[in-house]
Picture: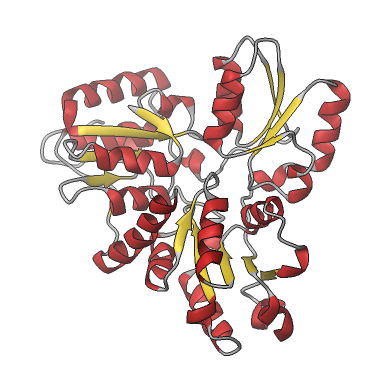
Length: 367
């Protein structure tokens, strides 16, 4: 039963509704809210969610769009938790950020807990003058508290499209970089920059000294956190080989969160936005194998009917946590908002927000 007025609407009332009814009711709630609400949809979201988005894109772009539209007091962010946090960090004080499902997280972001990063920093400090020699650089796909750590320790954030510029900035200031939580973006970027493999080490937070000899830590230029994206690690070199056999003139384009063995076999490597732009601008009749999240690839197939677009893996690779935000959750959040109830309000503590914004601002200045 749908309850209105002063009583908060319950999510359980939405689960049994047909998709068509959910779509209509979400649209009606959005219309009733008018310019009070901004709905943002990450590229990996389901179509039933994306259809209601005012903008779609990657996480940082969407967070910046929210901040630029400060006249919209409510931001419904259809993504995952760290994305909504970034929107809260960059948004104006009058804006409220809402995440339709609080369980929508990121397994890669969870691979670096602040306690582990603090312990890593302390371990490094026992071996080297860490504050003078190491710049922490955190992928934007991370919790706000990790961005704050970087801001407080002279560090910076990065995206998949500006990682190289960020690394150049970091090495221009100190001799080493601690890059977390995705080792593959860090390694692929460093490979492209010509950094020798002997100057990179991987830090395993569950092992003493990250599992590294002391001398390797002292000589390393790049300390890569042992973390990965579960979606992009599904792609294998054999998948690239298969599509090249099937389609000799195929273009293989992958995300830099993929393993280096896949990246090295691809024709093009870049961020989600880069992949969308490249395939969209390609000549009609071209053939593409795309190594990134399934919802995005399927959307490219539909929106680029003059090209042949294939998903690079034979295995279904949806972002399971991103997939948690569905039509029932979005409708529930929107109708509650239309009735005056804010659900799943994302609030980054003020001290974290200050330091995290410093790290984000440094990145934006570099970019």
